Amino acid sequence: MAKNMTLLWGSGSCPCWRAMIALEEKNLQGYNHQLLSFDKMEHKSQQVLDINPRGQLPSFKHGDNIVNDSYAICFYLESQFQDQGNRLIPDGPEERARMYQRMFEGQTFYEKLNNVIYYDFFIPEEERHDCALSRNKEALKAELSLWEGYLQQSPGSFLAGSSFSLADVVVFPTVAYLFRFGLSAGRYPKLGEYYALLKDRPSIRASWPPHWLENPKGHEALKDF
Ligand SMILES: N[C@@H](CCC(=O)N[C@@H](CS)C(=O)NCC(=O)O)C(=O)O
Image (cartoon, rainbow, N blue to C red; front, top):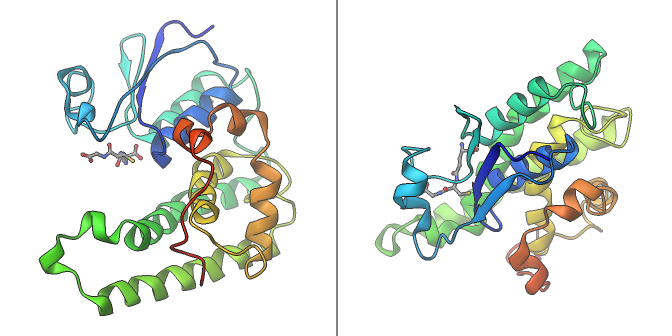
């Protein structure tokens, strides 16, 4: 039981989901957690700012150690609890290299997805242009082809190879968003296979965004991709 850990999180946030998957994988269930509402601006509350001056979620504390960035949380948990739960950094240098590479490329993937599905949310109305959104869509399509290719070339079913690793912890939430927003598994079969394989993994099921469970029907923004 991880009673000396606290996670402040928001439903549907990919960075929060990464931290929660890592906590599950390391068998750290039982940590203190509080679900905060972005709509109510609770991520800017004093409770969050006391831990995280950026006022962002996830915000995470283990004893007196504060680690707020989702990637940092994943690395921290893996190094502090190396022999607990599943090992998330492969031993072999080849798989390890691929893991690091895919993890950090995953940030570009996440950004390109957000530039399409949250275009209206991020860009003020007077600054929106159809041609900018089209460009963002083309950039996301190119990114999708890259990841489809990575999975095709992977020597195993996971992003780094034959074992589930930190690369999957940080990238899976982005892939789940793609399908939540209507991506066609017919057009991206490797991504579809990857999503189907991982969505029922216990750590992922246990941390599935609660508002997705309440409202399983997603959106259609990526239907024609
Ligand atoms: N690099 C951070 C980013 C965290 C982040 O952007 N969180 C978003 C929710 S997905 C947030 O709190 N946004 C509110 C804000 O930036 O004011 C991480 O990976 O943990």
